[in-house]
Length: 627
Ligand code: SF4
Image (cartoon, rainbow, N blue to C red):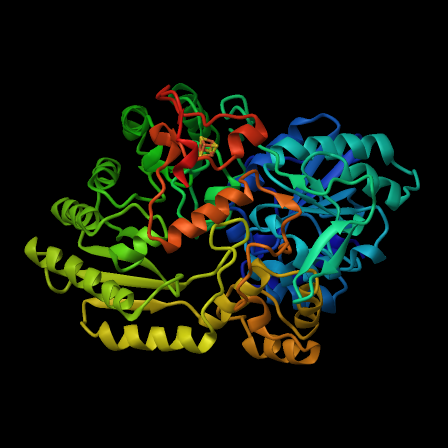
């Protein structure tokens, strides 16, 4: 029976069959026979999450633009669909041509979140492929990129090659190499292919590196083959205006998590929050010109018909031409009934004013992220936000008609004390008082305090820091629950066990591949989803493999250690990260280099690039003795 016939038998039996049918508006179906290189983009989470991912839309556009290549899409099947697929022997298939993944030349995963790693193993297994890279043939080649590729080791057993940095830069070169080495029908020697891949800038091939161990048990990676680089340096797009951008993105049939046009205004953020990995790996800041953004907004509206455009970036209010851009967009999109939205707000009155201009109806809650409860701890993490900034922002929000505010904090940040926990409650109380001052009706006034657990990430100034133990995190959450008893303060705490696993994988080594595989064998799937996350599976797998969470999540590294991810070069120097770590412990702030003072992170000279800020200010290097 053909796959499409089998599918029509199972789709009526699963929740949301639209996740699996493809054929959406703007989806691209190319002639399979006439196209030389076939790539499938694999998103290791459900359709609605994957379709909200701008990176997928960008790479889909980049590859399908080429006459010699095609890209189709596949998402992790929800457990009900997986059951049907296994029962009916339906291999994992692409949405466009409904072909099994085995028919493709390249399977390209994106790694957005550590807790989707077991879905990658599951998708390879559902595709009828061995999850282990060393047991697979050259075709299909399994590659992966995205933020989690900056510590690739936990997935090193499963992936043939990792792309470090911005995929638009590298994927085309991988396709070119594939065309040259692997024309249709040709038997490919996988070792030869991997060797050629490993010398492409920005490509890491784990099979050509081996693991060594320090006397105190830190496993790190060195080249096993003299021809491969000791460090793989990230690739960076130099000119955002010249970069390809999808002006006719695929419009899902099903409401996606972010169901709107996405207009990327800039890439990178140099605010240097010391816990933030995105701030390091997407450096430096590169802005697009407002003229181009206006053109792109018009084209997106024409091709999609969405009624909302989201101005995306790590920190949209930092875009140097944000005010004129918003005015221009509202000028031509407003009369067409299209809203403009800002996904993230800075903690200041300017951002609230922007939100006020674009959001005519104050439906939603306004969200701010002070991250820590006291000024002392905010200085440690380099979050340049004062209590006064927050109070001015909420004052402006309540004055503009909002009635509910959400505050994001992190628990377990380095140097945290009970006073910092008290500070979280005190800030929430102060915000509540502002609401009362503005006479927000009691029944409507609400302050939601959302508290995640600090996860130390590779390539950040906090990469050496341990995570609090599970018991300590639970005690801190209980302390906060005890404090936040007012009816109008709602406290949401993240699952500390999930955060512990995330921390293990975020700073894990190659040994953790076994844990992922064992957990998957025992049934781990969709671990980031509370309804599917089963801590007992992970506990049992760790027991079997004699893995202690404290070895990983709770480990404090020394500056002298060669770290498990040190062979991956994010462009920011280790010297700078050490200096930033010391400045954190001393409570010293580091300025944003967009202000014109280079903080010496090393990226611009290393990658021969300059931050692209439209103000045209000259960057003045800080004195060499700043640290
Ligand atoms: S080298 Fe200087 S200007 Fe460039 S990103 Fe780093 S701190 Fe900013």
